[in-house]
Amino acid sequence: MAQTKERKRLDILEELKDGGGPFCSAEEVKEFLVREDMSEKDKQKRMKKEMRFARESSTTLPAADPLFKVQVTLPSGKRRDKNAREFGESLMVFLGKKADSSTSLDYNTFKSSLRKFADSDGNNN
Image (tube, rainbow, N blue to C red; front, side, top):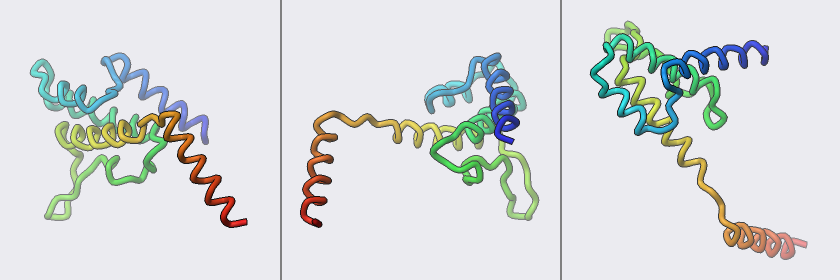
C-alpha cells in the first residue's frame, strides 16, 4: 500500500515537473494564476494536480484536512470541483503553513531551552 501511494505521488510529481512545477511558494502560485497564456480550464487542471501532490506529500497536515478538498458544496447542496482561483487560495495557505513551520532554531535558543529543561527536571527530583 505504501508503495502504491509513493508511486502515485511520484507520477504526479513527474507530471508537474513537465509543466515547471511543483510550486514552492505562494508567490509562484499567484504568478501562475495571473498568466494570460493559459485557459482557465488548463489552470484548473494544473492547480488540481498541485493540490493532489501537496496532499500526498504533506507531513504537516493530514490528507483529510479541509484545505485539500477538491470539491465545494453549493448552497443548493450540489457539489462542484473548485476553480483555479479556489485551488490557488488553498495551495497558498498550505505553502504559507509549510513556510511557517520551517523556522530555524538558533544555537542560543536551543541552549536556553536545554537549560530550562534541565532546571525544571532538577527541581522535580
